[in-house]
Length: 361
Ligand code: IPM
Ligand code: MG
Image 1 (cartoon, rainbow, N blue to C red):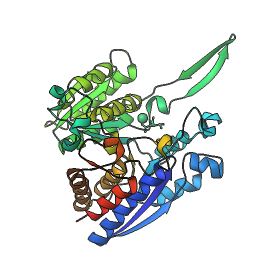
Image 2 (image 1 turned 135 degrees about the vertical axis):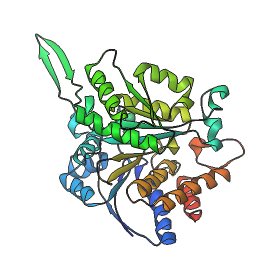
Image 3 (image 1 turned 180 degrees about the vertical axis):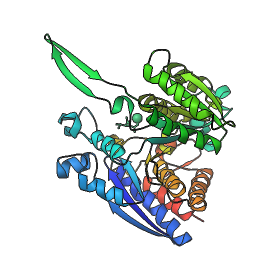
Image 4 (image 1 turned 60 degrees about the vertical axis):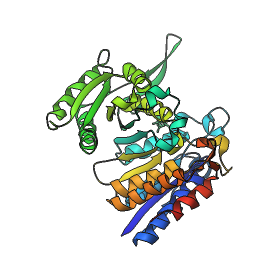
């Protein structure tokens, strides 16, 4: 099979981790008889430096022509990098928002899993973490506060900023359907998270989610207010299967959920549209402080590549081979510095990539 993949190395540790992901994908191609065809595009600071904008229209066209996009990370240090002296619509993050919108990537899947081998890194008390957890945050990605009208004005000498939170029922329905579909393949539970005690957009969210739920009688649906959900994630994360929520809440809760695993360097993500196309990226950021040092953890990006094999290319066996390689290497005690613990062997980003590629069966 020919796999046309657009790569976005991006900024910070992005180029290093994408290199390792390609290493593993190339090994998959060799073992399973596929052909990986990569095309790189610039996005974020890397694009600003060359083109003056965080994402060009040509780059979007290149991405659209591929089957999937594999991304590292974008952005720099927000207090010291000159990229953040630019107007907001020209900063690195604007490139990411632009590609999400241009490719209609409305469904963001962020798994948060407690790995047995890394349980010691979980910051929760053992009495809580021993129950384990494995949840999927389904975040709406192209609506809400991120894409509503915004402006900053001055009224009678007083500066005023306005952001608007809008959702129509179609936007809610399509992400809810994805959420229930995913729940059907998991533990069949959806926790829909909103702020329906305050926001109209949340009250509509709840209604539409309930309508969609009627088509999934096997799935248990519960509603939870976002503040309570933030609390429950540290109190008893084992209660969650699929968390279905809007853009801004999902941004915040997915960071919290990943922190609770103790190993954000391990967490993958996928952003999908209505077709098989997807953009795959680690859940973590560009970590500019450790860029270029060959110490970043490439596993989140490699597991994102596994999600790509599964969701875009339907290559379940190949995806499982990548996941099994990760498990095997962790079992053997190899760790990058972020997940290092006593008795293990610390390895660099590129050595971790080598070890994982070797383990592809
Ligand atoms: C994320 C990031 C982005 C977001 C930023 C970089 C714009 O935090 O993917 O979660 O807020 O969506
Ligand atoms: Mg975020």
